[in-house]
Length: 508
Ligand code: HEM
Image 1 (cartoon, rainbow, N blue to C red):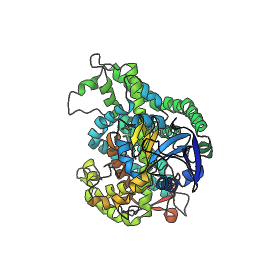
Image 2 (cartoon, rainbow, N blue to C red):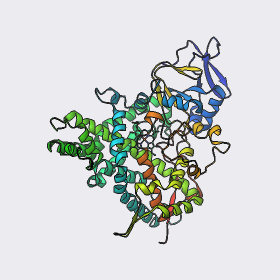
Image 3 (tube, rainbow, N blue to C red):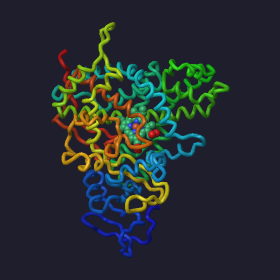
Image 4 (cartoon, rainbow, N blue to C red):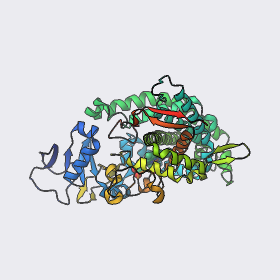
């Protein structure tokens, strides 16, 4: 579909195959970028090296077939242009395709991604202070439990905690269930269901397991088809019907039967909706009848699912990277503990200590550490757009309907921006540079960039800080053999690193 220029000839150049025009004409300004055939094994296991070498060798934009799709990969120079020129490069079309969710783009009168952004901004960002207060105890309790489980571990030699990523997923799932549905609904059945749903969703997107599955790499289309059927026909209906779906349906139903008491409460500025779901009900209720119709209730189910799927898995992966990185860099532990002492709040009435949005905003070292971990964790092919027409980009034209992906490692380790030490970990450098972890920019695209930059990043970074501080105030993390392993070189966004983490309880 994207090769629109006559007969092709394959040339073998230094281990790559470059596909060029048969007539031998050089690429000129109106050509599509050259298509480079990377060896399958190389691109999946040595992603960074193989793509970067190809970009160095064949120019700033190359076409690469991956998992049965042609993608155009750009170097750091075009990252900003691709991510922010919305009329030429569409976020919505690209992500719907990548997530195998094209269907959501064609629901009349609805806009899945735009509605999600609005929902997050109005119901989460505006209430972050209250949300942090309500979820703080979850991090406190779960850190204690994790530390205890590690201490009791039967593996006396390594004293490894239960799978840290899985534990973090449960923590983040409990947080999101509390935020979205309210504390009363944070039952273990609902939390388990959310973890299961987010895991199958990662499979559905083809991102989590396809890169590491030989079958998925060899037969990408077949893999996607089978996965889609398995997930959509079996797992999603089962998990959805088991608890989360009925829960949303019941709450929206009760809301409708009560003829919208929340809607009237919206008129009172001090009275905020108690959960994101109630906020959504307030938003979609028919103001004249004060009722929610079935279509709106179904749309609310879709949005709540979208919110869960966008938030739990990604945050758990980054949090795991942060804790593992801290465990292998013990020199950062003491300064972070010192910082915690300076920001922690004491409630004289209860004698308890805690952290609030205000105190977390003062945690500049932790914030900088998180930003640096995100910058250097090794993202490669992460943010994606789709050309909406034959789109000019640098010296080339990207044919309409093609995926375009800036190569993240080149952006995050650009020596012209970060200097000669661009690839060296410097955990507190962002304190002086006053660049908070949530700040996106042309050289920091972990949360994307421009209009579509992640709307949940304020919540995500605060969650990670809560997890970090709650852990280090009771335990010292360390890694078996002092390091961790990247599980999937192509995907550090939804696939966590692998390690055996141990938590040594502090004597308090
Ligand atoms: C550390 C954790 C997270 C990371 C690394 C992350 C990263 C991203 C990235 C890269 C994008 C695409 C941006 C672009 O292409 O320009 C995105 C989109 C999105 N994120 Fe996050 N995210 C995280 C946590 C969250 C959380 C906690 C929420 C919800 C509360 C959330 C909600 C969304 C949504 C709804 C989108 C879709 C885009 C949109 O509608 O604007 N994310 N995220």
